[in-house]
Length: 337
Ligand SMILES: Cc1cc2nc3c(=O)[nH]c(=O)nc-3n(C[C@H](O)[C@H](O)[C@H](O)COP(=O)(O)O)c2cc1C
Image 1 (cartoon, helix red, strand yellow):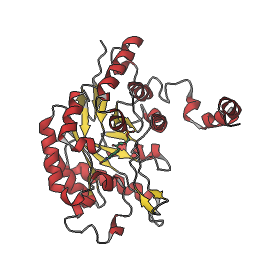
Image 2 (cartoon, helix red, strand yellow):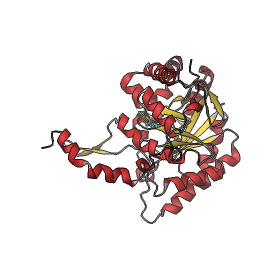
Image 3 (cartoon, protein in one colour):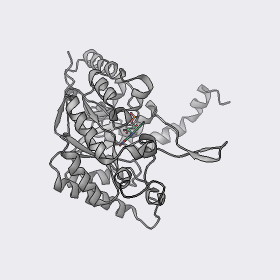
């Protein structure tokens, strides 16, 4: 029988399927169910700087302070006035005690001092790792990419100086040179990379003529982007690689591991197909390994990463060119004309 054990951030996991940060991991019923359905670890929903600052800022005051932050906050904490940072710490502590699988905390702040202070507080809850959710939309045109990246790298260094648990970074795909940014984080000693965060975009409701924040889940097609970058990073960094965004089935986890991922994180599939899909995903990975004659994840991890694949062009521009050249055949296959 296939051995699904995985190693992530130096933590041993019984399998490579991690339930990613979401409202499913901020609820006792669903974390217990996720554990029962077999996930290897949990990432608790992020503690956001807004939640921390709400102690001193009232929501209705100067919301422009938060303009460059993500919309997750408005979806995850609709009753934000009741979800203070101390309650979050209490929740994380409870979650750590309630399950036997590793629990990772997640943090998304603005000021370096706040990042460091709350990273330390989260460490004290007993979590085994800390994921830094670096999703922020740079809205100041005067701020260069280099300044933005350096801020992130300096922040991580300041956090790692103060905490002992492994620290991972959950990155957005919107860097000019993601591989370079990952390399610099890696040189700074980051223990792992979550590739990539799913960005929430505002929508416009044409009836009310207002902004709206729909509940957008990923689809399996989204996995192409993480696969491309995990594939190019595999074997080039010391930190662990976690693929996320579009992992919906066991086959998606296999794809990510073939590209070089150590583990995967999933969220949307649990909302769409129920938490019980975790068990099916894991048994599908196991059956696939048995069918292929692989006894451990190491037997096939990175088999199709950039360094190992013979089809290196698939990671590059040539794939795009090839698709354009073959577009006639797609038109024929579709009902476009
Ligand atoms: C309802 C919901 C809440 C989320 N909350 C968080 C969060 O608190 N912190 C975070 O880093 N990501 C959060 N995410 C993003 C997920 O952790 C994950 O990165 C993303 O959904 C991509 O994975 P998926 O394709 O399996 O959904 C959230 C996603 C959803 C759908």
